Amino acid sequence: MNHLSRFLVVSTAIALASFTPALAKAATITYDVQVAIDSGPLNGKNYKGFFSYDDSSLTGIGDEAIALSNFGFSFEGKTYNLASDPYAQVNFNNGSFLGLDFAVASAPSPTFISGFFDLNEAFFSYDLSGSSAFGRSGTGGITFTLRSNNPATTPEPTAVMGLLIFGSWGYVCCLSRQKKVEV
Image (cartoon, rainbow, N blue to C red):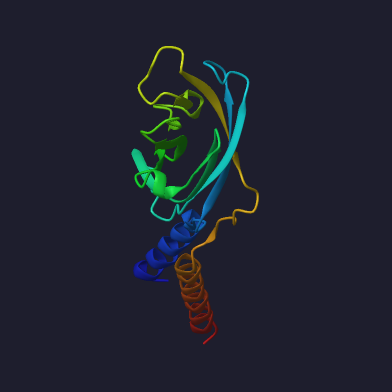
């Protein structure tokens, strides 16, 4: 076997051995959210909602913010959706989910605030007066629960196709080498 053939076979083997197909990301991720108020006049009350986002643009590198694709939350008799805060977003740091940013200026001013470095730092605040009047505001903890109906990641079709092409090429090279040896 000449040096070029040997180099090609070894290079292909190393490339195939170290090849990890990229995973396609799920189209839409949905979380259920529960708020447990722990201060202010609403202390002890619980509220529920949900939000969704498309994670196809998430790179997992550095700080990233992704706009919400859906949102629903009921608080003190009012129902909020994306029209309530068109700038609502989820935040990530190096691929780690940090929470939800959502704010409404008018009373009762439900506000979700992401963690800065960790999801455990995320919290909820409210202001029943709309003017931060003493005793009319408070905070609460947030529990995020990923819905189990989110699609699983799958290998990218282009990555699988590339693997098949390289594998087929290596197989053909081995067959042609065997035929030359037999002749």
